Length: 148
Ligand code: DAT
Ligand code: MG
Image (cartoon, rainbow, N blue to C red; front, side, top):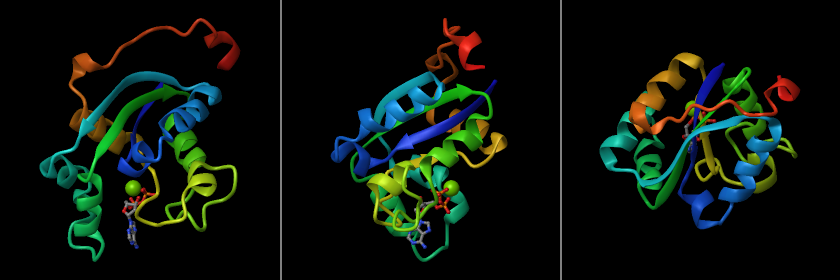
């Protein structure tokens, strides 16, 4: 079963979209394996977005991610990384297709509500960055045979 790291970034929390976004993942059939609300430190934000260091939008991106509370979660399920990326929509909210989270709720490139890991390898690194091992909870959903 694949796991992915999802962040509901400070704009999602401020705009009270946490429940709406979580509902989409739950309805898809993904299992919540970890969930918490945090004020990301600059150090954590820099580690999380290390791949973007040096890009013109980097400083603004770090300011944004440290500007308020973020809800961090681990989702688990079949093809969880790709499934979540598809549910999120493309990076630019203005271009993200209707029906996706960004397509329905975001207009901005930076303030695009949500982060999702882009590969299983990065998911493992990002989960380790945001969560201690004992913050992940394992349970067998009773409808697993119906969801697949
Ligand atoms: P994604 O979040 O879709 O994986 P990414 O990893 O390329 O996108 O970029 C990380 C975040 O950085 C993205 O969610 C929003 C911001 N960002 C990306 N490109 C940007 C740009 N050209 N201008 C401003 N912010 C940008
Ligand atoms: Mg990315």
